[in-house]
Image (cartoon, rainbow over all chains, first blue to last red; front, side, top):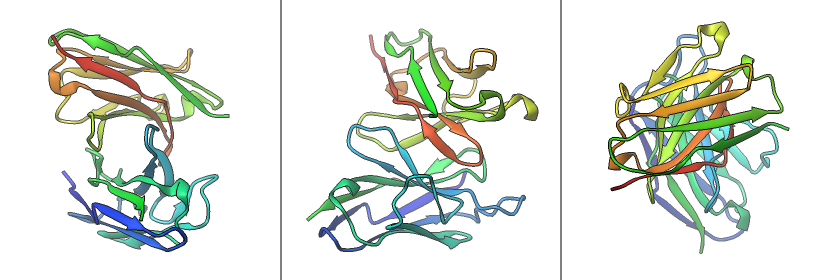
Length: 112
Length: 118
């Protein structure tokens, strides 16, 4: 099983300031088809998860461009360029390269 | 508009069974795989299982924690995915989500709560 390690567990951020979340996998997430199935999801309080980023860096439909993803192999990062109040919630990285699919432990983004 | 509407949750005793449904609309259901996830109270997300589209054989994959007890099926004529849960344990208590999968888990259901307790 691929273990996903996410840091930090909590990120207090001032409105308008950037935030960064790191996700490291225990083995390469490059699939045999050449793609890397690393996604980032946002879960606002009381809501289902929402896809933000897929295949490392592709923003899903309707996701603001202040969200960006980067990385390769085993190291990945989600960045929020300027945190807004609506960004409060828990963020998860998820790998779907290999079964069983696995998640990071989550990073709680909150406003200072 | 893509929508996934879930139903079938509730309170059930340990050892009993429950079936969850995920009714899809707004897209060609046959073309997509579907996946199930869960979230125990106050915990993170956990993948439960996956069913491929019929084009890819309609085969399934499961997490070790549910393999042999849970099964996923699909009725393409009704655009519904199912999660059949047997031999339920107290540790299966969670909010269960279905999701459409086409190279990414892009649309999610609203979630349905399953509580396993005597």
